[in-house]
Image (tube, rainbow over all chains, first blue to last red; front, top):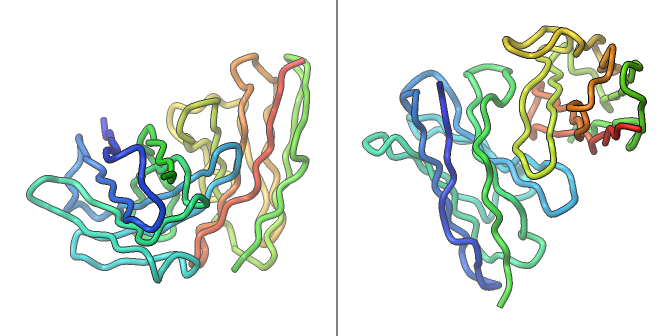
Length: 119
Length: 107
């Protein structure tokens, strides 16, 4: 059974960098999947941030592209998200999820982690 | 960006009744349309893929249809545990986009 688990600070100061990691169990990060991030502000809908392949290929949402960097660590079977210059609007639950190569859905998702941007 | 317009935003349904949710894409997306269920304080889970294909382990009362720009998600006989918010998502082009969600409450 594939499981994903997000980890990282729950509180980030404005203008700082948000950093999260998603640890994958039950599947190899080298498998033919894209590893993605989706976020959800409190009480709002879902926004795709981007995803990464184990080779390092990435696709980012243009709305966030200038501030987003994703990376993968195959030795640790995890992948990471960095979002720079955060403001209060970046406060959200951040989910990681797997997407099979091709035009496939996200399945499964991690449980999500709330990141609050506040001083 | 492709805009996914979901309707209605909210519906209250009696157990045993049928409920349908519409999702309209601002341009054609073939059948690259997925439906998710999100219960309070939980992550979304995949219910329907490629507009109408069932997902292993998901009850058969959940179904989907449509192609191109117009899609419908149906719960044939609502159970109390179906209280949740349902989202559509297009997987046709980047950026991937979601509908605004439909909250289904139980009367």
